[in-house]
Image (cartoon, rainbow over all chains, first blue to last red; front, side, top):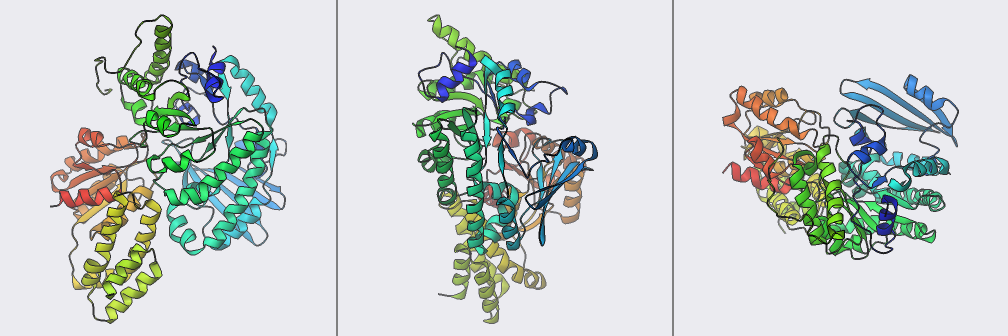
Length: 403
Length: 210
């Protein structure tokens, strides 16, 4: 069985794979610490992973980047670009700051301009730290609805097909679905404190109207994804009770997840959700949702749910993850292998199970730790074929922290 | 229901405007700022902390309760300062160098203030020198450091080292927190304690300052 077949066997729930897949979330965060020009596929190969490449979009968003030929190159060289889409003037500017590069984006509509900014730093070169939220007042919400109603999603299937073909038998490319509106507002457009202490408590009607508009727009994107060549779509929810409660999740997140799932299922797509935070109190709510699986599940300290508990809690879902960022940065390869064995032993079978990083692999992760998981799953499978005891947990490996 | 109890209820039902209004009414009725704080607000925030620890409420509810508490505290703070009411202790808090995430430490600040501590929030991205300077200037009982990333938590030992070099380490308790941080890490770097969340931070500070 090749890596592609192995991953799809688990994801389609179509029989038993020859061994448990190993699919860490390697993306720009980890790649930022690799030598310049390193191919992301080589980064997967280096750690013996079954490639499950993320963020291979099947669509373009008209408000994100200019479509005019040469405009993106101009932005890259000049650090600034302005373009107009459906009566909205979008301005992007990247400028150096003492701590990194500040990206400012503004939407100019009749009578109002919305501006947001984020700082890309050495510590977080891939995801910007929010500096200025897009929505600061109730009037901003109305303006943002105007922008969202003019947001369009266009198929970009060729780029996806090219990358999926490049991966070939070594794995699969996955599409990135849009986040539910409340999560988008909490994490990006408003911010957690302001969302709850101002918008949610004082302007609920306007907030719900905006979320409805955002959801309707998101559905257009999911329609494009449903018609795309991508077999797997991952919605990056970043779910965590560190910023949402079970009651609010059930009211505002679950219905969106179900709508996205239904739309994708109509076209036989597999819909997974990235939920990398503390999930224990959300176990029931997540179990009731119609996504096919949860990926990048974190045990403590970042999250609170070991992979085997997630598998037991959600008998109808695929589960992927298990290795917290701190394990990958500070444990020894031996300890990592022991933990991999523990996951397998406690998971009760390898159906619905994919080993992976819990959240994105940090740039400080030790390559030998990542490789240890890849080697472990292969050794274990070989041992099983040969009918001898495979590597297991608690066999007395030296359990010390890395220097 | 007494006005002090009503103030507590306004915090527990997430009504900042009501908390403000009731605080003014309590002052008009002759209650002292210290009474309002100790018998109205602190017990309410204590309940909020317990509900959070017990999984009855979560961060959203805690933030909404804290907003009500802060609305009342904004009225009381100048009066408390004038009347020389002493706080339960002083805490300097901030994220370490390179870390720009402040939601966690803001929650800790709010909960500590609600529990009667005097909090000096340094905000984000503080060098070891900034922590040392803040300790020199404010003479806190506790220094609290926060980090959200594995790439920034490694700055924490440097702050402890800086405090040692400045001869200030023995005069303060050092606590740490943040998503990738653990009790094990706290022990490893020589901190005095680790708190997994804001409610636990209040308990930890209370225990350390006993």
